[in-house]
Length: 274
Image (cartoon, rainbow, N blue to C red):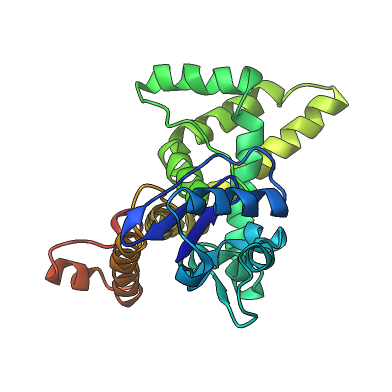
């Protein structure tokens, strides 16, 4: 079985051995396919031994499965499937497009606005100074990553929740500095900061953030383990199933902390605490 993970490299599983992870210099379909064949040729693997292949979306975008069929003269019924674990790690893409979850996208939008506001310059320095004042370590606001969205959300919401008090204090300070300014630009900045302050200083935002922190704490770990390159597929599968089982239990215990206590372990440590 050819087991492909990323378009920059691949892992081949053959008789329970990882036999190759070469670097692909030219990321085109023919060159990626040639790199796969080169790795297999080193171990004398011929077309009759290749029964199926599994790839992520980029491989299909580059038409690598079709190229491999031609390179090895494989039959038309050769089985090539999307990597199921990799696809499972991107399932939240569909959830974010569901109108039912507009509230989640709004939370993510606020997270992004706060990152853009405080990630550099004077406002970042203000966060550092505020940390010194209240003697608290700053987690450092994180931004969303397109190529590893689920895993990046984990750090976005966790770090924002950790820095929540610091951000509130900073937003108040900025408003105080701009309050009595007669400059029109300063007034626009004041309104912008006040809007951000009002959006996060309320119970709904705090509870949504706490819930997402717990959910993506697990789902981010899930997305992370299913993309690991240094373990076998069955090891990734076992790790992924363990996390999914936990998330199913989380669903059943969302509104009942007493069930957590029955199991002597709270599955919603941030949401239930807050």
